[in-house]
Length: 353
Image 1 (cartoon, rainbow, N blue to C red):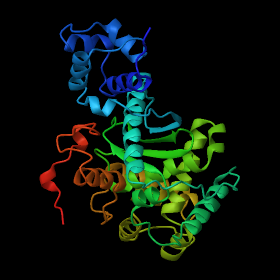
Image 2: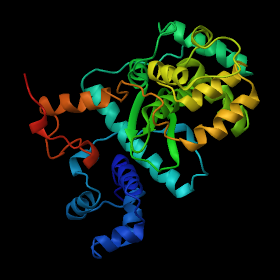
Image 3: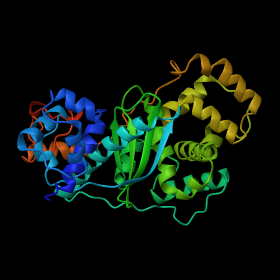
Image 4: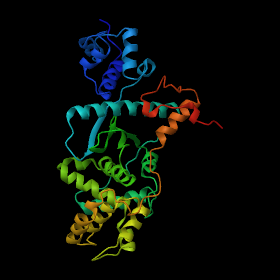
């Protein structure tokens, strides 16, 4: 028996899941050209689709045969989701399939241009047990990455420069982000692209960084683990020495202008700033509850409380795609390495010097 190329079978399965389609739905949309049983065999590598069927599947999935042929499937492990609600297994499965495709594409472009940066964990020697350890870890990361106590102007770019693969994708409303490992050696972070403030995106990125840097956290229960990652994110965004300098060590009351100024300077939400002040015992729990219940709950978007003036977006993937287009490795209609309309390149938008 001739078996199908393993790579193609993996991609057919992943792309179908990414599109949120069942085997039945694929068969129906192809008007009975192929049965769900045959599609299942394609995805398990037990049967080869004819060129006509493969072309029809690619059109349905908005992909191309060139994209499927010769790709190396990657293994995603160590997944961690930041979500406000439990995630249905089908949704997780679809997201993981989408991430596999995007990350394989990312690695292919890096390899094409020899643009791979190897990630090195700056805090492997630290043992994390409590919040004080997280404060120390944030200080050490800032030191190792040469940040001092200054604002992290672009969190996404900082993570990309460290060797992490960072993408922004349209994911479910209740999911802020996720992270994991590619082939057990390359960390990645996926951030929600739609309907999210820049401050929340920055916080989520650093929350996911904590999951990557401290695998020992996985031994903790879910709530404790998430609190530890929150503490790291707030500590690296807003160092305690900055708090002591701009706010003081103990306060009974705060002004909106003080909090707005910190938000604008350090790219962290007022809600997260107030929580950090409580964590550092600068304000009491009672005063924190007062601010949260009387002010923050009534202004969840924090309108009128300052705004972070800089754009914090991922850069590397888009740069690789543009280079691939300019140098002729990708076509404007997406043939070859094209995946989705969200990253379809319009040649007219690329001005060549």
